[in-house]
Length: 66
View 1: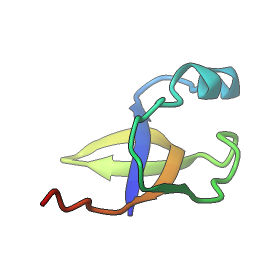
View 2: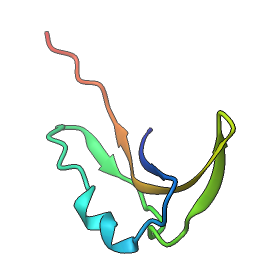
View 3: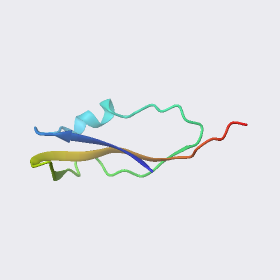
View 4: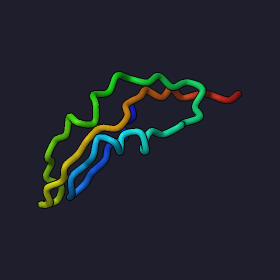
């Protein structure tokens, strides 16, 4: 599973969500349900407090070339 997450020391606007969606060109990718960006969490990273939010979640399947 892969997760795209934003970390900010300032306020995060839910309108940013559409700017950060990644157009991945992968043959075997399943998008997972992701809560709206307004579900923000405060996290401590190396002693600094950040407001974080998950932008995208998906499952990537490896492809074997033979």
